[in-house]
Length: 484
Image 1 (spheres, rainbow, N blue to C red):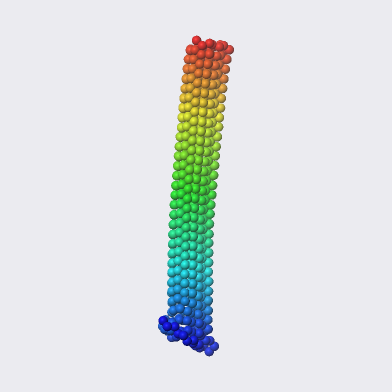
Image 2 (image 1 turned 60 degrees about the horizontal axis):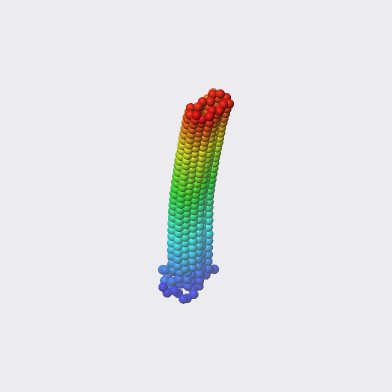
C-alpha cells in the first residue's frame, strides 16, 4: 500500500480538528483530537473514532476515548484508555485494558492485559495473560504466564505455563505441567501430570495423578499418591496414602498411614494405623498399636501400645511395650515382654523374654528363655537356658539345658541331663531349692535336696544328697548317698 504523504487538518466539529496521515475512510465519524497513520486506500484504512484516539497500522480502529492502536492489522481498542500495540485481530475492550501483540487476543476487563500469544483472553478486572495459546484468565486479579489452554478462573488465581492446567478457586495456583487442577483455597500444584489439590492450602509438587484432598495436605512427586488427612504428606513413591491427621508416607509403594501422626517410610504395602505409629520399610508390616513401630521385615504386626518389631517375618508384638528384634513367627503377648530372635517363640508373661531358639514359651512373670527348642518357663522369674523340651514352672526355678527336664518347685534347678525332675506339687511346694546337676530320670523332691548325676536316683527327704550312681534313694533328712 502507498501511504499518504500529505498532512490533513480536517474539521470534525466547529471546535475539534483531526490529524490524518491517510486518505481517511468514508462515512466514519472521527473523534475529536485524533491521530491516524495508515494506508492511502480508504477501504483498508484506520478508524480513530474515539475522542483523542490514535491509530497506526492497517484496518484498525480505536473507538474508545483516548484509546490507541499503534500497529498491526485489524486490531480494536474499544474502551476508554484501551490500547493495542500490535499483532492481528486483537481486541482491548475493557477500560484501561491493553494488548501488546499476538493474534486474536482479548482483554475485556478493567485494567486487564494480554502481552502476546494466540487466542488468549483476560476477561476480568486486573486479569492478565503473558503469552501462550488459548489461555483464559477470568478471575479478578488472575494471571496466566504462557502455556496452552490454561484457565485461571478465580480471584487471585494463577497458572504459570504448562498445558490444560486449571486454577479455579481464590489464591489457587498451578506452576506448569499438564492437566493439573488446583481448586482448593490457596492450593498449589507445581508441575507434573493430572495432579489435583482440592482443599484449602493443599499442595502437589510434581509427579503424576497425585491428589491432596484436605487442608494443608501435600504430595511431593511420585505416582497415584493421595494425602487425604489434614496436614498429611506423601513424598514420592507409588500409590501411597496418608489419610491420618498429620500422617506421612515417604516413598515406597501401596503404603498407608491412617493413624493420627502416623508414618510409613518406604517399603511396600505397609500400614501404620494407630496414633503415632510408624513403619520403616519392609513389606506388609502393620503398626496398629498406639506409639507402636515396625522397623522392617515382612508380615510383622506391632499391635500393643508402645510395642516394637525391629525386623524378621510374621512376628506379632501384642503386649503393651513388648518388643521383637527379629526371627520368624514369634509372638510377644505379655506387657514389656521381649523376643530377640528365633522362630515361633512366645513371650506371654509380663516382663518375660525369649532370646532365641524355636517353639519356646516364656509365660511366667519375668520368666526367660535363652534358646533351645520347645522349652517352657511358666513360673514367675523362672528360666530355661537351652536344650529341648525343658520346663521351669516353679517360682524362680531354672533349667540350664538338657532334654525334657523339669524344675517345678520354687527355687529348684536342673542343670542338664534328660528327664530329670526337681519337683513340687500343685498343693505343696515340697521340693523348694532342690537341684539336679545332670544324669537321667532323676527326681529331687525334698527341700534343699540335690542329685549330682546318675540314673533313676531319688532324693526325697530334706537336705539329702545323692552323688551319682543309679537307683539310689535318700529318705532320711540330712543324709548323703554315695554313688553305687
